Amino acid sequence: MKFLNKFVTATTCLSLALSSSVFASSENSISKDDYSVANGKSLSAIDIIIEPDDEVETGDYITITFTNAEVFDQDVIDGEGESGDVGYKKNGYQYRYNGDNWTKKYGFGEVVDSISNGELPYSIKRMGSDEIKVFLCDLPSKYAGKSAKSTGLGSSTETFRYVIPVVAAADGESGDTIKAKISNNGTTVSSGEVFGSEVKISKSSSSSSRSSSSKSSSSSSSSSSSKSSSSSSSDTSSKTDVEKQMDAYAAQFNATHQNASAQSSTTKASSYNVKVQIDSNIMLVNEKPITLDVAPYIQVASSSTLVPLRAVTTALGGDAENADQSDMVVWDNVKKTVTITYEGKTIVFTVGSDQVIVNGTSKTMQYGVVTEIKDGRTFVPFRALGEALGVTVNWDNATRTASFS
Image (tube, rainbow, N blue to C red; front, side, top):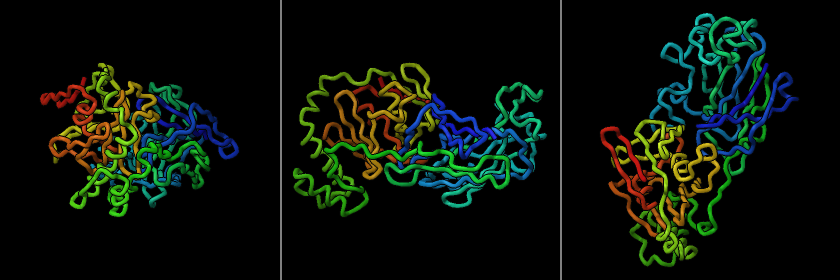
């Protein structure tokens, strides 16, 4: 059994080395290590790729058990979830055959003509919060380890294989290792750990100037702590927890970044022309198309465009390949804040709040728009971001396109 583990992002495919002592018949390679994701973030960008070198029989299945990751709901996996569900994806994560989710009644002989790039059908069943069962389409031994083209079954040169998405979200503490263990249940698939020690939950990288703020925007005791750390607020009794936290951020920022405003006033904002289209995964940065893992959307309550954090990082840095490792954008899972540092400006958004802090000054965003989490990802208001950066923001209603330059 040839067994590979790959990380698929917008522009790069990362494969991780596996233990040869566990996967005795595997051919392993590594192109990048120390891959990390924020706690609560979907792991569906990771594909587990299995290339059989022996027969897979009708009814064969494997189980995959996760550590420090929680499996999506079955409805989400099947494509029947709701937009607010963790991991939500319009058509779900099952293998699609003839416009519907593949089922075990369709064997290799029936599906082979529709197989694209050598990818074989599978069906995922949630067994619990940390385990899935994956049913595999049969594969006759004479086709194992071969491609459609080499066997006269098509034009694809890719080896027949199963490409199974990781239908789970990170669920642990900062620095924890995420693991996935396969049990083959008597099939020819190799058993054992998949990720090794390569996949981790991101460690907090919040600056020391914010270290004394509250641990949770929803905790009354935490907001009280935020209040005590800010000496500039004379009357906070009528304010919400989020407003109190915003006051604390503003005071702490001013105490440690007194020259930030002066620096930013002489700094030109983003030199990038950025365009995003509602429900499109393609973002244009200086007319260069960049693929996003999730599309921008309009927040119903505010009629405002929201974009994923990855889009923000890519737009500001112009580097899609390393967007996840950029230090321009920092997500604090405890405080539920997004801190963007760019060209002398520090911009802070808080999930569930209609406030944005720019260099220590809090401002109410237009139309009641709030930063929010959707599909397991954090989205920020596009217009508020552009205005905070000091650039011109435009909206084309005919094409449902937002842009700033």
